[in-house]
Image (cartoon, rainbow, N blue to C red; front, top):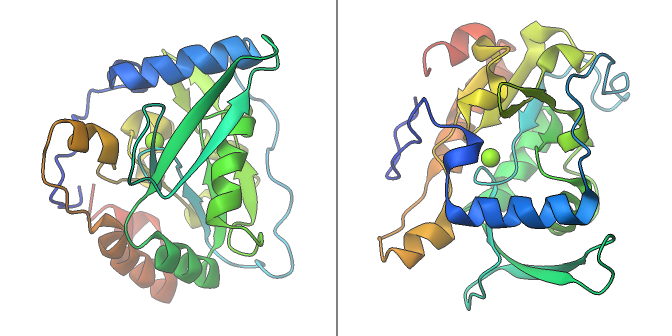
Length: 236
Ligand SMILES: [Mg+2]
């Protein structure tokens, strides 16, 4: 477990008991899209590596509370905001205010130099794409985007089944704030402390977050040694 000035999520937590705001978002998405969650995937969800990424370790990054913090409550210090219109209820629209995790620009740029970067989120495509288009406006940092429909729904959690990535599991790493996401392959997962900017601000807690810089030090080692499992084992 990485050390950080933030408290890590208790290991027995799931995405379904995190906070009120999560439920609000989930409710909106369920209204917007309907039930799109497959019970279990049984097909490969990534194409072969591109020529540019050939031979690179595949780094999967979660989105919410890993790279960004978003809220539907209006903020004054957000980095960007966007609106999503409901395809089900026509005129219904919700606005999201997004705070980027500190050092994310440097983190993504360096990761893209070292790895095949895949953002693997349990969020739905319309929401995730709005954010990823801001984080990677030229499409040069992230090789692939995987959304909720690529997750497997297991025991109440959205699990990111790394065996479906069409990659050698010895060369796959998932960084996620929720251990439940990598419960099928815990040896490939690295838990990052949750980035809950808006929640901490609401509680008037001081906020210092250097997690992406800390993670990058581990990733540099993984890149140099071209080894995932034994290095990650030192931190979990
Ligand atoms: Mg997350």
